[in-house]
Image 1 (tube, helix red, strand yellow):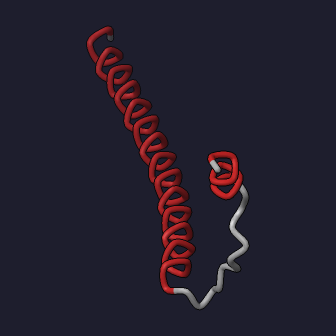
Image 2: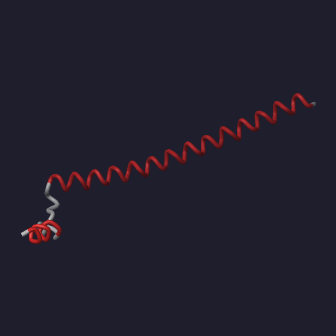
Image 3: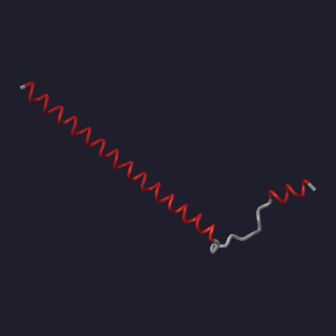
Length: 72
């Protein structure tokens, strides 16, 4: 009897997942939204790194210009 239950529990369900099912549709929609958010997060992170690098470059240039004024 326990073997029968374990076999029933482990075997895959024969129920066909219908795409008209509200829950299944919502799960697919949520996966698409998460994927889009991950892409946007990556793009935002790249923009922030670029801005950070540009700010550092400008800061370095300002330091060079101010040192040039005092050394002359």
